[in-house]
Length: 239
Image (cartoon, rainbow, N blue to C red):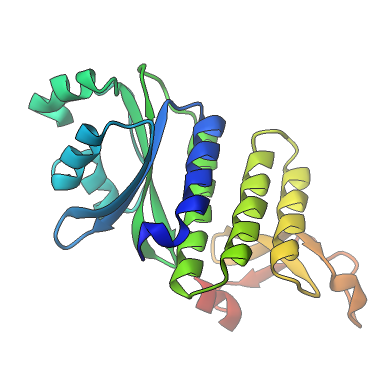
């Protein structure tokens, strides 16, 4: 997937992630995990010198840890972290004191990383990690839609809907309200008779919010809280 296929959409995600996470700069990196190289980059407020140097070789840097672990990685203060070694002056010259890298994953496949940068040291909160992961998941969907040659207008609607849903995480402390907003946005893009959001707990998926099921015969009034084994064929395929 080439960045220019969905460049407008991904630039919008960079702007949104910068605003929601309070960062000074951000970037999307596409990885080649075999060659240990970055194959494509889209940036916001980063110098060309910085992106070219990181793209040349990220071995030994936080990006390599993300590629290997497929988990978010953050650096609270680049000038105090030994991982940068003789690159400390380079990081200082580029005013990068803290960063958060979030893997862009789609059905277990690593596509790339969303990175947000800060000019000052900082401590990252769990809510920031969750919100950042939501943005990375949004990017994964956009990128895969481009890969499957879906219409640009459909991708834009999907991006805006998911960004709006992600933004609700930053505007409400009521989980039910947030989940209802996410469902509302999803059904706008994927017209359906019914939809639900479930949380994985152990070996089961527990229904947290739903809509549309009341129209079906045999609808169970107390649908919330129903648990389905992860071995159920549909769930097993998704996971």
